[in-house]
Length: 332
Image (cartoon, rainbow, N blue to C red; front, side):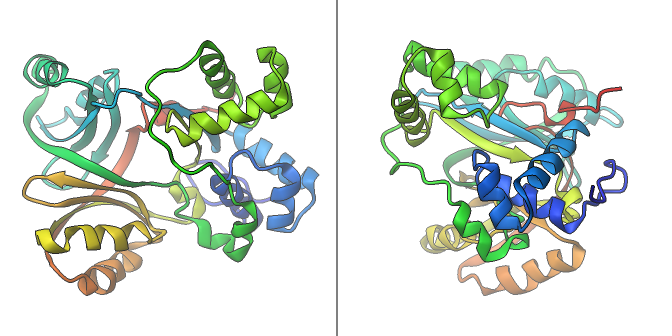
């Protein structure tokens, strides 16, 4: 067994990390595919991944997306009373319309994302539900206009070219689904229990054919009704800095800068926003040296960038509606 340790030492060995990256590239890849990509036996790949899951370090997630075409993202920067950031973060995380919550450094102690499907629900949240949370001193809101990137492949370079063989082909994006059939919902529920469950097993549980199951799963993914991800704390993979960058870009250059940023592996999340700044970017970097290089080399080369501010992510509490801080505590 490799150098698997607990979260305090934040290190895995090279093979562990390659296996994790393979699962980030394609969470439903077979153990044969993963073994070939990382250079070990199928048994070793399965055993190591299983051990990481047993330790509560590695998690396979299925996210059922909101289907309403009217969904609006609102990013909240929250300043708290002294000593109240944790409790405020807990309250925000408990709200069903909050998609993301993180504790951060900087002017504000919390960054959160709220999603609503109507002006009425957004108004109710901002004027009633949010103001009822004790410990909040100030909230600044930013309206999301487009999400450019949501990716969990920030460590892809660890695996190198072998990652290409794990390609997770999804049908060409189509108009997002607006409703689910009973079979669709049952399929999603089964996948939430085990995202790596084979289509044959899924089909047997659903009482349909394997081909029907494959088609429905492809339709759900292409229609943006469901997504898969492999979650692990970046520190365990050797990435010690998680940061948010708020970028002020000239309007004529905004979409060009967004297009360049979304191609960078260290960018985990990217959205255009309406406000003083134009772009919100989440970065995963190895260390402060890499952070400085990103500022001085990458950002410095972007035409139209007028300014930027940064905050360091101290802890993620909620991602894609899932409480990631509570995932998989090792069994006693």
